[in-house]
Image (cartoon, rainbow, N blue to C red; front, side):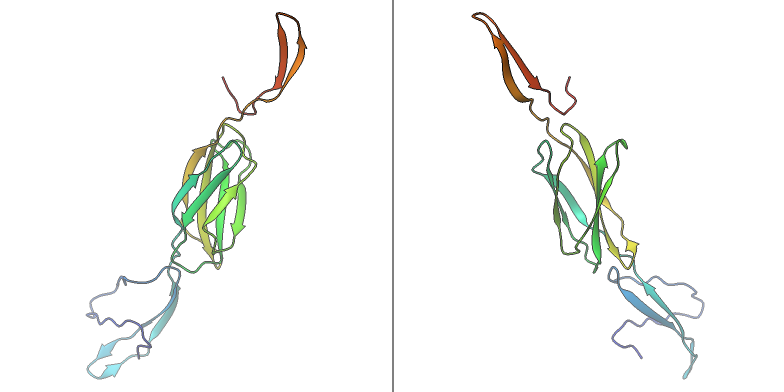
Length: 170
């Protein structure tokens, strides 16, 4: 009785088997029986789920001093959510985690630190099982100094003040 599945007949000397062509994140029922002439044993049954595949082709684009746009190709498996994590490279500061709707394939990272190197990682989750992740790094642009103002002036001099860039510049 096959119920639309796959059937493989193996010699009795074989005690292991690898089934290929399965879909990621799917539940399968395996029935194993011994056959002899016209006789058939009771089945031993196991229910197993293949691992879910993760997102692929992660890119970061439109990077400014405080914003970066992240895009990825969704996994083929049905998933419950996308997990996006990002933080400064080298472990400075906390990593931020977003749990996103499974249909999303892009996200805008906001309030980034100017002139800083970040790592972003994306994975999928189904029934509490997390896929392998894909990651990439990017560097935010250096922000411009701000609030340039004239403090005083004479016929031959100007005294100016400004607020420095937030980025570490040399």
